[in-house]
Amino acid sequence: MKRSLLALLSLAIAPALAAQEPADLIVTNARIYTVDDNRPLAEAMAIRDGRVVFVGSARGAEVFAGSRTERLDLDGKTVIPGMVDAHIHLTGLGVALRIVDLVGTRSYEEVIERVVERARNTPEGEWVRGRGWDQNDWAVTDFPTHEALSRALPDHPVYLTRVDGHAALVNARALELAEVTAATQDPGGGRFIRDAGGDPTGVLIDRAQGIVARVIPERSDREMREAILAAIAEANKWGLTGVHDAGVAPPTIDLYEELADEGRYDLRNYVMISSSDESLQRYFERGPQDGLHDGRIWIRAIKVSADGALGSRGAALLEPYSDDPGNTGLITTPYERVREVAVRGLRNGFQVNVHAIGDRTNRMVLDAFESALKEVPTADHRFRIEHAQILHFQDLPRFAELDVIPSMQGSHQTSDMYWAIDRLGWTRVQGAYAWRSLLNTGVVIPNGSDAPVEAANPLISFKAFITRQDADGWPAGGWFPDQRTTRQEALKSMTLWPAYSAFMEDVSGSPSPGKYADFVVLDQDIMAIAPERILDTHVLLTVLGGKVVYRKDRGTS
Image (cartoon, rainbow, N blue to C red):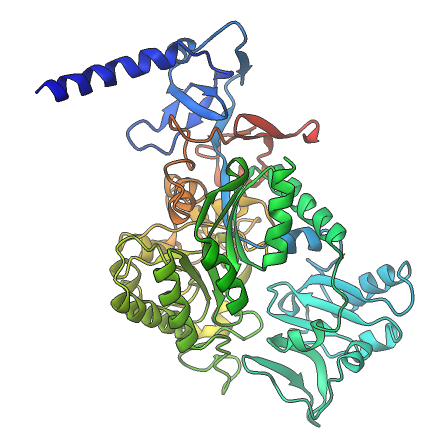
């Protein structure tokens, strides 16, 4: 009884003691979406030492005011928790900002024009790189061949990554430097597209990309640091305070830590390490790392890639592609390796996140997870399948049964819907991008962009989740609209659910007392405006740990 009384007294005294310490910042006159179902809206919050100490009424926030407390009157503007992209390639985004942008090209001829323009300012013999082409956007949707590109650029080696990152187009000079000929065998998990005579056409699928990429000179540390900083600034511009960085090699992680140690890393990065044995050994010896460098870096997850992409017909399907009979896609990491990494992850306290797009790959990964969990029973493993785009109906409930998190990207649905039925046929497409079916089983879905595959703006995926329509409102009513989510679910998919999916729900994901003061100020209320206006919304402020890292009128701080 005495102990219980003391405990109650301490609980009563703690808020009073906290109130005696003034806040550094009080945010007032705001419309704050808390993602707390018990109190979804608030009007003010108080911040001290980079963390929230109060969220609620203006009267309550004033209790924390002191002589040196700064005030931020938002004049009724909308505040949401800092958005988190649960699947992004941060350095890929930074690099994409510096190479030839091929996103939105409407023909192969336009691709060549953009590459030729860049080559004019590139010394002869140096590589010209680009990213973003998608033959599905062209009048002729067949894969291109290198001849026209080789005629336009005979002396520069050219490497052009497809929008999904799972295919590339190269010219004759690049094939020559890589010594790729008709006699070159397809690598495991990859394929050289060939003409009728067996000669490579210049299109490389999945692991075939590495055969050519290995002869491209590596970027210097200086170039990589610049790319990383550019990517962070781009993320902040769109209201991102955190990312889950999918598949990062140790040298890049070292650069992350260097920049964070220098105080130049304005992002919380939940890093998924690459799954090479060398990488696993290094980080298993170090052990799981949470909140390094003032909460900027987490290292406790592994990324495995198990198949290709739907757009380049590399996603592994249970039955052949409807528009490519005989092709069932590519398994890039076999079942045995997925299971092995899962077992090792469980034994060393690491989450395992596997890229799986096709229904065959998703079933294989679920099987591997199930087997690994039988060998190393673990209650709170939070294993993830990244993308989970195409699911057989029998596998939908297995995510909840195995406590596996489907990490999905809303913008993939609105990019792929124009041709997904051609790839899959009417029956299989019912299990594609099946957000509502999965949510109804009791799982959460962290949302993301897969940038630079898609644009980094998280509101694109937010709108996709609630409408299943593109920027122009097509199709009317939404593409398979029964799979839409609510706005509250869509907001959680960019805030609280990514936090849970990264074991960070106690420190981020919502403006709750004790959590990081990460939030975004918007010029429109995305929870109330008409859906067609959502993509016209601008980020006014991005705040990380109580510090403004992006301001619309000034850019990144």
